[in-house]
Image (tube, rainbow, N blue to C red; front, side, top):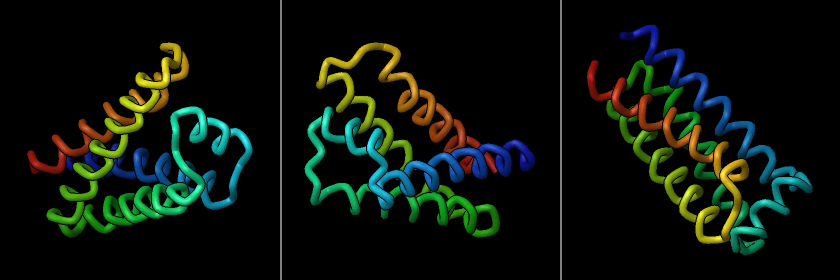
Length: 116
């Protein structure tokens, strides 16, 4: 179980870090997606910071369980919001899938965090 926790924590942590970097570097595709779901320019740095903080929390949470638990729950809430935003914007199944997969991985990570 511990190895699975490490693997999923690292995977979702890397995905969150990459996603936050897209926001911080203002990648064209990232900005277009965010705009399409109604995110304001002023909200983008905060979203990136939340993702990066969660990724760090997951990494440290490998050794400090409460931090890993909080970070994984935070990411699950974050990605649930992303799925909801995509659905409200009327995006297709294909467009909603990345956020849905990240939501599922963050939920699995949270379950692993709480089962140790």
